[in-house]
Picture 1 (cartoon, rainbow, N blue to C red):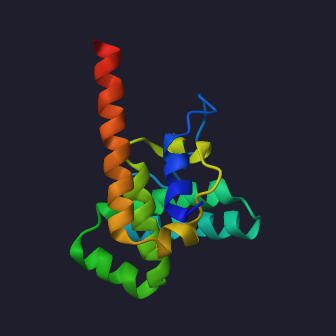
Picture 2: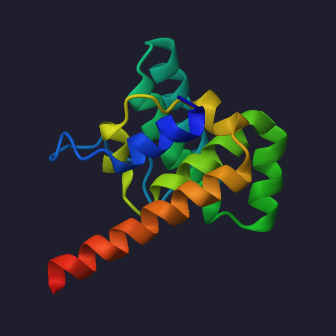
Length: 143
């Protein structure tokens, strides 16, 4: 299977149905730099322990904070963190945000490297196809 089809499979996964996600490592009262450092430190810890899911979850939190960063904050982050990681965090957040961090716990194949090297066009298609299916599912549920 291709990376794209494996990621798609993960986006459609429904088990486990109930997950308790790791808490966000930062809170809204902290500055952007501190928030990014805290999330990145958790990514490094999870990666060192070989915890794929935790690595993805904390990368998601990093991407979430980066998505609301101001221009100067983004510029500072680009200087501080590797471009590969910034790209991966942005893409992971972009893919999983509509479905929540809980969906990451249902993944089996998704890894930071797969997300980082995937073509942006492929990721957009994955996100759009999942969004469309969710809209259809919600409509069927309501009707």
